[in-house]
Length: 352
Image 1: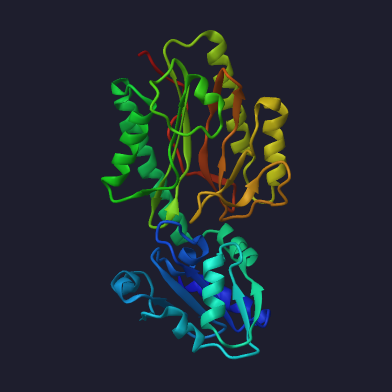
Image 2: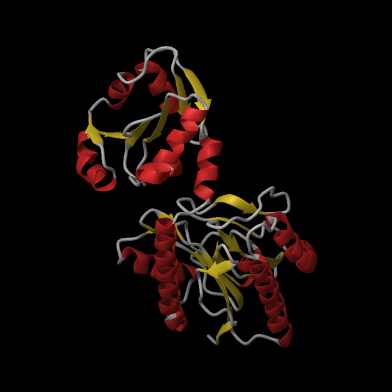
């Protein structure tokens, strides 16, 4: 995204930084800032000078894929040898300290002979990612729409599933059939398992009671993140009242979303009503990363601005008994908000 690179270069000139170097060595374990700037999720190094064209340097086997994503690509077997040729002693070079690995650091020092001054660019890149462009928003809307479609298809087949892993596998297969990766490993937590906020999918049979399903996909490098809770069996009046309590809190928190509002205040509103059974932050930013800024938590220093995309996901969890969570992705607009995940939130009851 050219405008993002130009914004980075403007920052570099202001901070007297000669080059920014971001790299990704593992196609599966991605460097989110690298992908944000290059739109490429393979192996490579992005070299950004303070002015002029940025260069994506990749191994020869990655060249064709890289050229589909970035405007200026150089293919080299020895990537860092090419990078080293751009640098001179005394230069200030920015690195993404949030993703600098031991392997990457050692390669950098071994290949680059110049004596350089290194600075951290990670905080700036994180803040840059918090405000989405019109292009990014369009991509994220599509990601959320696909996610909803997968939920609808899953719920239409829910009475056919026997195990928690069946649900996760079905949703994953629907995503994969469209050539999509997941934002994270799906959570399907039924019965007592739902009391664990981040329960990992098991091969256990679906249990009676609340079943929390947390799922998202990655579309054109951007994530969605959505949670719905269903009830397996016949809910009691107390179950329905508890669900309605969580839903009411979620709707109230969504109503608070608008420019200038402190994220802390939205979180504290939910926490005041749900109490100690609410054991995690109310939400987080979503974008290239499924968890990024701004944070919506009790200690958050963020104020919402137009272009933020955040989750609102209140929940209650009673150890050894049950859990409920309802999560939507929401865009902060100039006038207020726009819900990106629009799927109805009435409690779906599956009488298995």
